[in-house]
Length: 123
Length: 492
Image 1 (cartoon, rainbow over the protein chains, first blue to last red):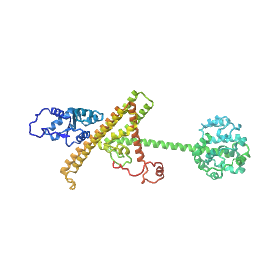
Image 2 (tube, one colour):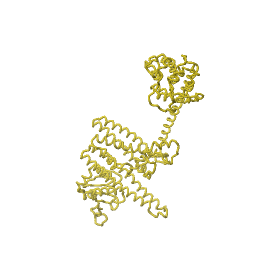
Image 3 (spheres, each protein chain N blue to C red):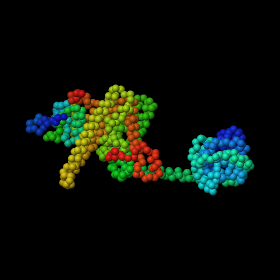
Image 4 (cartoon, helix red, strand yellow):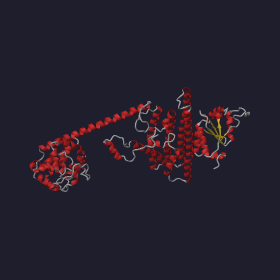
């Protein structure tokens, strides 16, 4: 698992503004497994442990450590239609969902093929 | 019933074919006599009938040399005819009572003895005692004295048939005399008293039952209205805990759910045994699954109002609480239990279930670790600042507010855990065939039925510090299966 700091706190001009949702999509497509999280959130911790336990190396964006994290959070809330933005998982650039969707897909056996397809799992 | 019996066989005393004139019945004239009685057939009337028969078969003493000892023994315990028995040993002095003696021999044992004599002054009391045994007595006689010698309180006496026969033989052929009449009247009276007592007792039972149902209704009403003082869920012993209305409501709905569960289970079982078509079975099974979905929905609602009620397992029985994980069962454990119950699995199915177990384990592990982090974070918040210096009001409220918000995350974990359980059940359903799935879900239901039964046994087991009255010592003998010490899960 590696935490992306990209151009977060740097003084480099980032690809300016843009729709936060666009940014989300861009970030999500850059890695096989992308998790948006908040460092103090325990459920985020749980979802991270789930993927690590499966042998996956997800890319994690901690929104509370991003100056524009709030926007992303709001965008994610709108995307999910729920009051809690995190944790949310993208696999292969596609939205999988929050904890309940991830667990449901793991139980019904669709998560692992998805991971393999995205190149996150080789076993 | 008895009169039918008496009328039914064609045995007349004259036939000489039977050795048990009494037990087989009475010939017709006597039957008519019985039928003329208006009141319900009771022993008073029985005796009269028998007496009459005894009179009629006076001639056939010779046949009565033998009566089996055992049936007589069962009858001999009834000291309800003290006067009669009193007469027998003194047969010579009371030849006039021959009728009684004869009938005594007919109806009861030959094993009368002087032991019964002292009871005559207490004849009223004795006959009352006997009244309770009268129905049994009647039963015995009518059943022709089956072999079992029940409640034979008195020891078996020596039979002296011939002697009494002889005493009877000397009697003349008088019919009912004053003494007999009086005794018969006494017996009728005693029977009537016994009937009244029985009626009173039954009435008492009824009123108690009504009172009990009223109390139950009141309790339920109080529960639904919010606070109530009692032990919640299946827990034994009301320790005076107050539970919230959300928890009380959930408990009530859960109780109803359990009843429904029983219904679903028996429906499924019947369907399996009746070998219904797969289509029909599927409908029933889907109904059962919807039933499970319902409890998860209810738990979701309860988690919003009182997550601790779920997490501490107060809604479940003690034995279930042993295995509690995040407010419910651990899916991978359940699968482990179910695997050996599912025979006839294909290779693919077996792999599917193993992989299900593995995924479930991983998910459980992740959730557990998440919860651990929650606990750590909460502990840090509560302990922040110097504990030894006591609370500093300024920070205190902030601290508490933070702790509160962290605590609220608990609901999320319970929801996810329930979600995991629900998904696991549905996946089982998908992997298995209809019949396999039906058996599987029956197995799950039965497992929890047994756990709950275990809980009941546990809570009703005798404990060392119980009052040592007769009742508890009795239960000690009956319920020896659970060791009455040390509940390792009492911390729950």
